[in-house]
Image 1 (cartoon, helix red, strand yellow):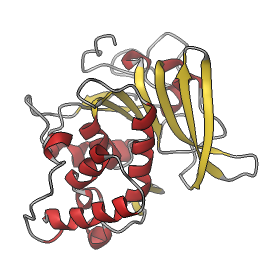
Image 2: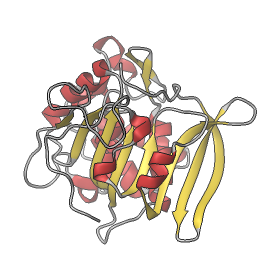
Image 3: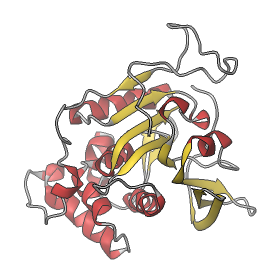
Image 4: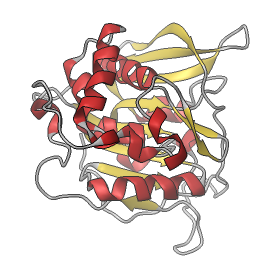
Length: 276
């Protein structure tokens, strides 16, 4: 995989002519690298969390609260040890509004503002497990470079940071991009890069990606995502079915072409182009 782009960089605005980025200082699509620790992963890394957690902290900060959520995820069928470990490491309560913090570890979606929601823990775990089953894995068991479409409040990006070598996450709503940046900054995740821009365009400068995951559903998977996916990689995205409902769509990119599989029904916010 080619070397990652340097930071800071700028993404072309969705209405800019093809191949011509907006002049510096005028375009709205800015990449922000979250300030990260230089050594290791601040959340401990997937390997460190495979052992049974030792309860610590108080209230929502207690690891026992997250451990209970992880047990329920395992009982529901999530079997990937690295995914379960990641779900147990990331403090979900730090990504929701204070008024909803007592519901943070329930298996429910919660509003995060601007008409958007944070996905259920079971949905996050399920999608990342599916991603890992078909994505390009490195010798250490981590996925390679992952592109996330729809940063939202930043929770899923934090979980992905535990199971991938690098995460590029795009958000089209400025308010949510800023919220995710504020949520993630204290965690100092060195391998998470936040982008403000049109997610339907992907992020070609970071390609090819071992995996692409979307938190919004459209009529079809944009061609830009498929072009930016590495051969051997996998896309997980909610898409609208022939019956007008959403379902998870898995696309594997092989040397012979694309292989698609439609899975269970889901409900995500609509995939939209442009920025706001």
